[in-house]
Amino acid sequence: MALNVGLVVVGLILLVLGSRWLVAGAVEIARFLGVSELIIGLTIIAAGTSLPEVAASVTATAKGERDIAIGNVMDSNLFNILAIPGLSSLIAPNGINVSGAALSFDIPVMIAVVFACLPIFFTRFTIARWEGALFLGYYIVYTVFLALTATQHTASTTLSAIMVTFVLPLTAITLIVLAFRALRTNRRQLDQSSDPV
Image 1: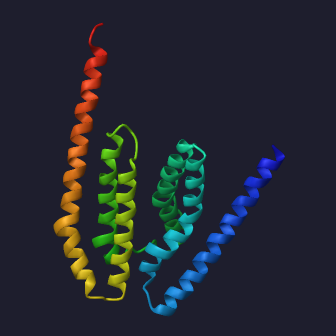
Image 2: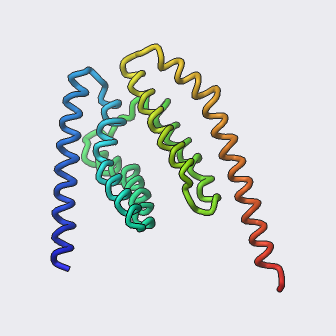
Image 3: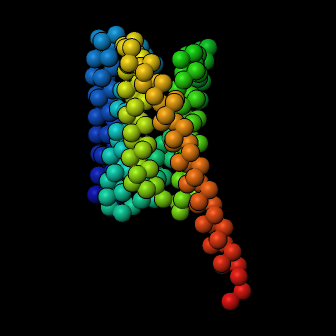
């Protein structure tokens, strides 16, 4: 028990140090390139501080401890959304100002992602490989879009148009169909289980 507790403590210390070094180095590089603090927070710092959670979740999944992986993801996101802004606003003298860019784009994207996750809870409470690949692909596209917008590249307008015109509607239709099928299947199973034998 003492060895296991010691390994957990050492692992936590190394995770904190590693993520701190990663974020510090990445922030300096991003500032040198002239990228805004919002972009740094949304990409480099978000990814850097989430790497320990990614490592823990991947390791737990590989060992068959999937509940730990899901619990880690859920609790980490709740902590990030609720506790960090709450604590930061308590420490800041005049609260925290939310930028217009975050209000007009990033927060609506976050809300849309929450709704995109809902059908997963209807489809036998599993995240299929294709759903995982879809989420990962969306994150990559989101990050690319942020980088293009930060550098004021003309491709950001094209990428935005493609996402709004094709990708998002197709994804919405797919999620609605999945949710409808899953609800029908669940209803059938409930009817079969309630039928007298």
